[in-house]
Image (cartoon, rainbow, N blue to C red; front, side):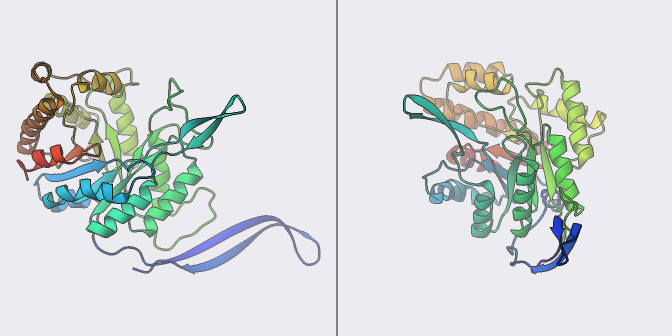
Amino acid sequence: MQINRIMIITLAGFKNLAGQKIMSIKIRLNIKEIPAFAGNNMKVTDHIKNANGKTLFSFEIIPPKKGNSIQQLYNNIEPLMEFNPPFIDVTTSREEYLYIEKEGLLDRKITRMRPGTVGICAAIKHKYDVDTVPHVLCGGFTKEETEYLLVDCHYLGINNVMALRGDAMKHQQYFEASNGGHQFAKDLVGQIQNLNKGQYLHDVMEVDGKSDFCIGVAGYPEKHLEAPSLKTDLKRLKQKVDAGADYVVTQMFFDNNKYFEFVEAAKAEGINVPIIPGIKPLAVKRHLQLLPQVFKIDLPEDLIDAVDGCKTNQQVRQVGVEWAIEQSKELQKAGVPVLHYYSMGKSDNVKAIASELF
C-alpha cells in the first residue's frame, strides 16, 4: 500500500531577497512514502466483531533487556502461535536513571533498559503476520515524541495502540508528567484521536491517508491504586472512553466476580466498549506478597491456601496454571470477547492454560 502525504510547513522569521522580513512562509511538499507492511492489518475491535461471540486468545510480552537477542523473544512467542492470537501486546518501559561514579561524585544519566517497542512490534508483525499493539505511555515522553512514535506506527501498518499513563519513576512517590508530556491517559487518548483526524500538534501538516488507530486503555476491577474509590476510578475510565478509547483491557485479577461486577458497574456508568479480562498465572510464592503490594489487589483465600501448601515454586507454578484454567473457563463460558494473558516473558504456563481452552 503506497501512502502519499501532503505536508505544509510554516517557517517564521525569514527575509526575502529585498531584505524585507517575512512573518511566515508556507512550503507545500508532496511526499511518497515507503510501502506499509502487508498482511494482517485489522483493529482489535474488528477482530472481536469478526469472531461472532467466540472468545479469542491474546497475550502480552515484555521486550528483552538491552544486549539480548530478539530470538529470545521469538522463542517465547512461537509456542503460543498455535492458538491463533489475532493480536499481541508489547509493553513499553519508561526511562530509568543510571548513576555512574566519576571523580568521587555520582553522575546521573538517563537510559532505557529495553529496545524500542515500535521496532519490536514491526518485527513480530512481519515475522508472524499478526497484529501488534504497542503500549504508548504518558510517562517519559513528550507530546512531540509521542507524535513521532504514532507516525512511525502508521507508516508500519500498526493500527492498534494501548494508551497508558505509566508508573512513577523509582525515586518518585507519585507520578509526574515529563516536561511537555501528558499527565493523564485521557489526554493521551485525545492526542491519538486528533491524529486520526489529521490534527498534528503544531498544525503544520495536512495529510492524505490519515491514521485510524484503534485505542485500548486500562481498566481496574479492584480500582487503580491511586484512586480514592472504585466509583471515582470508573468515572476516569469513562473520561478515557469519551476521549476516544475503543476498548478496555483490565488489570490482573484472581476472583472472577471482581471482573463481572466491574463490567456491570462500567455499563451503569455508560461505558459500552469491549472490556477484555487480563489474566496472570501465579508463578512463585513471593507473588502472594508482591502482587497485592504493587497492584493493590486481593487474592482469594482458596488460592492463598493452595500456594501456602506448596513446598517449591514449581508446585506454585502448577497451582497458578490450574487456577488460571478454571478462571479462564468460567470467563469463556460467560462470553468474554478475549482472554488476554500477561506472559511476563515466559510462555510455558500460558501455553499450558491455552491448551485447555483453545
